[in-house]
Image (cartoon, rainbow, N blue to C red; front, side, top):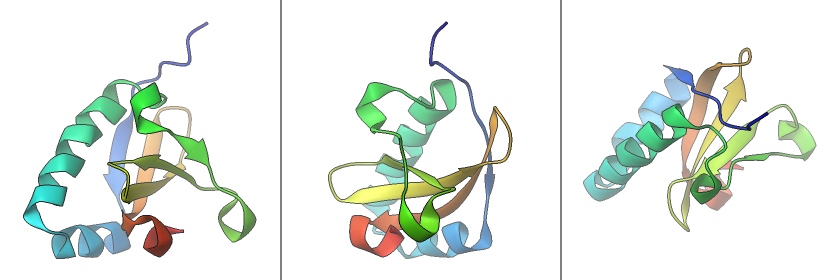
Length: 91
């Protein structure tokens, strides 16, 4: 069985506010990486991983070396994007 899973994405209010504040080039990069995520949640290039501590129910994946998207699985295929931003801001 493959780890490949397609995703249907919903957006939280905090994610939408944070996204609007990002530089245009990061917004474009996030949109490109989002399409990879939707095709395969666990695509190795994304470094999808479960978070720990207070965010132990949340997951994140990388847009690039600095920016991340934090999300929550609503069920096996549906995810809710919670936040987007620099690694230290999102965690």
